Length: 275
Image (cartoon, rainbow, N blue to C red; front, side, top):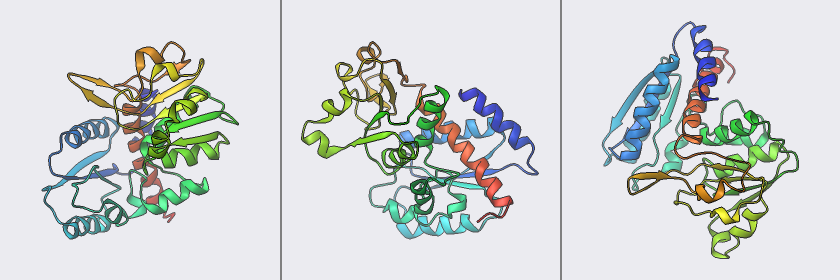
């Protein structure tokens, strides 16, 4: 699936008058961010997207980051901008994200673009949420009326994904910290026909909770010693599950593909003057 999308994007980009350009804003040297930047650069160049990193120190001020974003917003050669998350703790991520030009928001997390997801009228969207929907489409999962359970309600995965699922008429339940505190997550997971877990805690969802025949999409990626594990107890979950995405190698590579697809869609919007 990933390779097919890459080939399609490469073909589309080859028809453009100029190569799209993606600018990544990196603050400091947080290891996970360095990994994402390296991977994004590799994937961008593979499909014909120019990739540039604008790097600032982790001690940067809120004003300095905002000034950089405002400058990038005015640069006509820049198609898309991605703010590498997480930001240093002293910065206010929401106000910084709001400074992005919505038509250059490569990750689809500006309030304007999230609002379009709410209305079901979006061209771009948060990349991980788009990746999950792409997996479901690829496997021809009929979501109409299905019992779908999301564990995790972040602003860039759980919440927008819930809206995308509702747009497909899935019967959608969102579990979060309050659900956990009431010890109700196992009850919700056990009735899920489609389960998506995006918490960031290793194997927090146990295999014994998985409904027979369920489709399980594990968004989490966690380091445990020298190994990488997901948010779902994979070995025990793969028995009852009809399908379960692996970690690593499942949602992650497709998320990067969705980022590149967003850049392509932004290029089309900018060149068609469809603001």
